[in-house]
Amino acid sequence: MPSKATTVLRNLGTQDYLGVWQAMQQFTAERDDNTADQIWIVEHPPVYTLGLNGKREHFLKATNIEIVESDRGGQVTYHGPGQLVIYLLADLRRLNKGPRQMVTILENAVINTLRQYGIAAQAEPKAPGVYVNQQKIASLGLRIKRGCCYHGLSINNHMDLAPFADINPCGYAGLQVTQLADLGVKITNQELAVPVVHQLLQAIEN
Image 1: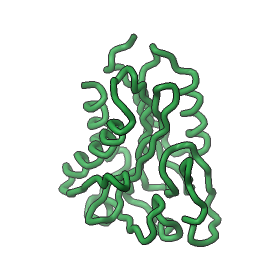
Image 2: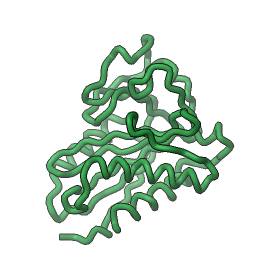
Image 3: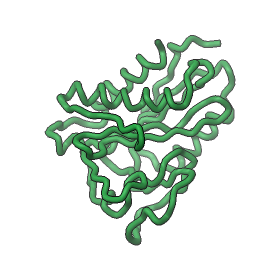
Image 4: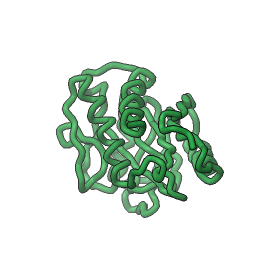
């Protein structure tokens, strides 16, 4: 059995959501007790994703943006250029952590990262994600199979937020979204990924 410190980092660049999702499913189906956990860093072209129990009624108007019915938790969200997406593919049994603990780890990784940039952010127990002044800046969702998790989190960094206006983000009517660029922080996704991944590694390797 490998130590918890063998987490593999993969920087995937820009890739379609569907292909990355299928790759996560395949990785999770084929992994065994000796497979190292992985963290994938990626950016997606414009796409709406619906969670397992996602309802089409949360689309407020017709759209030309691709819609993918995913197997993660949660309702509808949007991914697009300028948004940092980090997927955590981890063996929860080996880490001795439950699903709720993993959600908290994802939330805290974002909260602690934003604090480094002078942004005060909070989690909301009734609506998983990370918020700044009641505006959502990060979404998250996991899928657990065979005692392992995949999917992860997305952080709005420097993107076009307009597509969020055509949905009820995460199923909440009137929920506003924000991003680092609008809060005065100008950094690339790759720069933002560094502290987020550091926070995740600290949480799952300790």
